Image (cartoon, rainbow, N blue to C red):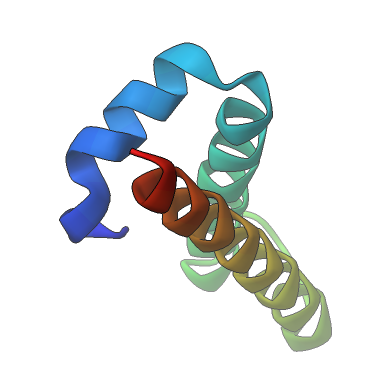
Length: 73
């Protein structure tokens, strides 16, 4: 996710607790979705779609934080 911001992500993961929380939540949702789609964890199509939308909102928030941090740097 966001390879162009790899160094900044590493930096923010050590300095910004809010960023870390969002980043970890995004990764957790990503894994849950993968498990559901692989039928490791039972889920309906609707449940998966809700989680995908939540994950996308987190990704948007992360991108916003990255953009702000890159401008400030």
